[in-house]
Image 1: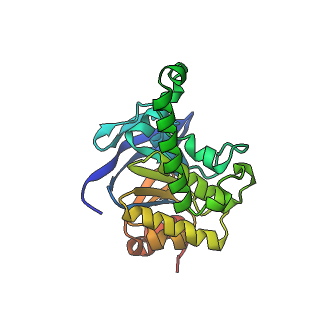
Image 2: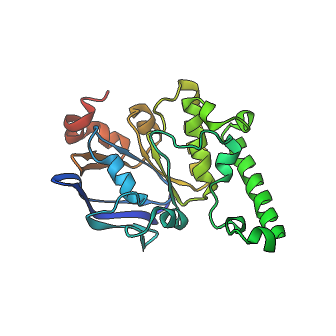
Image 3: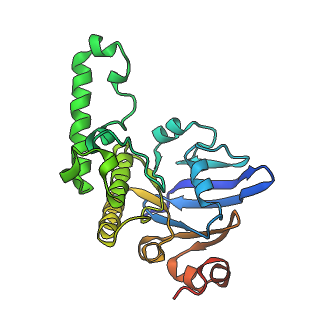
Amino acid sequence: MNDEVLLSIRSVTKKFGGFTAVDNLSFDLSAGVIGGLIGPNGAGKTTLFDALAGNLNVDGGAIYLSGMPIHTLSPHRICRTGLSRTFQIPRPFPEMSVLENVMMVPMGQSGETFWNNWLQPGKVAREEIAARERAEDIIEFCGLTRVRGDQAGTLSGGQLKLLELARVMMADPKIILLDEPAAGVNPSLMVTLVDKIKALNEQGFTFLIIEHNMDMVMSICDPIMVMAQGSLLYSGNAKGARNDPKVLDAYLGGLP
């Protein structure tokens, strides 16, 4: 962890008709941290993630990544700037293999341009080999080598979460947004997933995690931001969250 502000959210507001899902929200996230974003259902957490990733346009405020405004960019351009996200319900290509799903991620490959396959076949082939080698390394890191050739649609819930992680790693992001990574994951794969997040963080990856599993949040996340009714209720460490009366009243209900 260092003091460099990587993600800066400034007075962000998002409305749906007369309902304000995110209400004048502001916080900073430093590079190198595993940040936790918690709160009751309907607090606005996923709406905020959708805005950060460019899936929703904000109605007010601004979002900066490494000092660059990203709130007006399209999702693929935001991904290029270094922000990648997973979803609460994984969205792989179900009939493609694990390896193919991971290899689909890199953008700007020469082979994406139709005529390059004839005009620059050597360059296209070299890029594909490099992408395959990187994908194989990431799949091995995520513990998915045994199922690398299996269709993504046949994977368990925990394996799908690991595949989601592998896919965002392939984009080589500065920050990874994880939307409920523990949901639907059995205890053994949960331990694996947490270990992978910690290992990636040690390698310099920054995380912001939405999660309802309080044991996970309290054990690996610092800082922790608590949202309620679209607003920021608390920002600080796990100990402070456990003891903050507003957090306990609004959400945790006397977390032991």
